[in-house]
Amino acid sequence: MIWEPLLTPIEAAGLLKVHPKTALRLARAKSLPGFQLGKHWRFRQCDLTAWVESQIKSNSQPSESMEK
Image (cartoon, rainbow, N blue to C red; front, side):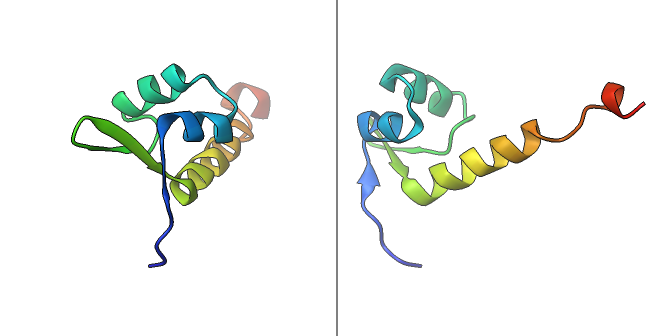
């Protein structure tokens, strides 16, 4: 595993183009990959990139109603 710097909520939000409070809310709900170091939330860029790709893939799947 290659070490990469951890991102703050502000940096993660900038990467995702969302408000920092949105990134924190999603992380607390376990919808966005992140973890707490003490009381501070941190994110790995590779985890966020993988999460975005999975969101794109799941949203581009045709729905059952469109397949009929």
